[in-house]
Amino acid sequence: MHANFTKAVPVSLIAMAGAKVAGAAPPLVVTGGLSLLRGRLLHYWVIRRHGWGNARAVPMVLAFLAIGGFALAILWQFLIA
Image (spheres, helix red, strand yellow):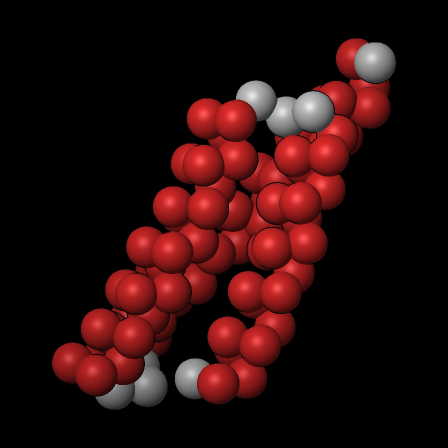
């Protein structure tokens, strides 16, 4: 659980900062941050309730969606500027 957190969260926060600096819309940045937060909280809940099974995939997808959304926002800002 710790290793997943130390990989996903710093990358997400760096991508979030990059999207903000690139000029992404504030609602997009907030939505991505909430997706990351929901994913991390859900990840904790799933592990506590179901253990280390495949159910962890859904919360991990929420974190990856945040990272992907920030990356797309950065690319979009550079392509239209």
